[in-house]
Image 1 (spheres, rainbow, N blue to C red):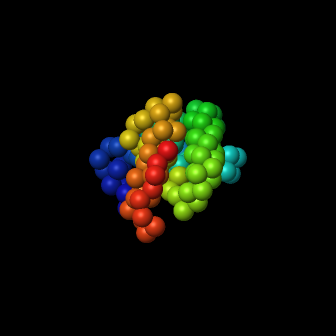
Image 2 (image 1 turned 60 degrees about the horizontal axis):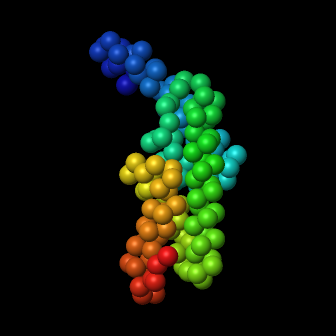
Length: 134
């Protein structure tokens, strides 16, 4: 298996460390999902792109939590804006768009505007015609 092959290559320590880090990252991601009610796509983007993976999952979680709280606030703010505009059909794009924005490397202070733009862009490609925009 992989462990034997890693041992032959002399990188079994690296494999063990990698497995520990991935396990830690997965646990931190699951904790963010349950603690803050974030979707898996947004929590996954935060863990994959914004934080260091430590072997202690709690350390990874602690580093991710402020980003997760900002993400939650952005999601709520974008959804509120869409509800005010009665653009209910666009609500389903919010999490996916925020995850894309995070993956593209936008800074947290750009998340709201970039997510809103993304949502309206996606809305143009869905049945129901063009959207007015923010």
